[in-house]
Image (cartoon, rainbow, N blue to C red):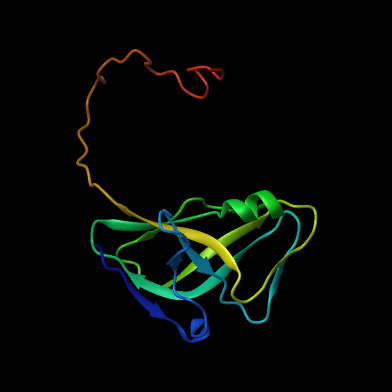
Length: 149
């Protein structure tokens, strides 16, 4: 199993470490390291600290994604979803929460605000060409393959 180092920052000392909430969960929950609570108004977004920094092995990234329950029940998303934490980044992990609801969103200390998924990253070399290989789809995009089953 891959190991990831976590550094708990002073303002995150009493919060749980990221953890999988079920045996087959793909993502680990991240917690809000806010004190006092923060309020995100309708249509607004704010950077919410997690109180964590990390060291991923080279060739891996952490993706920060929305929690489906927050999206469905409270209209909350992550503005730059998925957010990427590169393996050479050592600063605090923050989550840019967006409030799509018509009422204020209150984030309290310890709220589960996002999920984090660890992915292996493949590097590529770029080869500039005059023409690309043909495919059946070609240049069709943005709904060109249809919208019905």
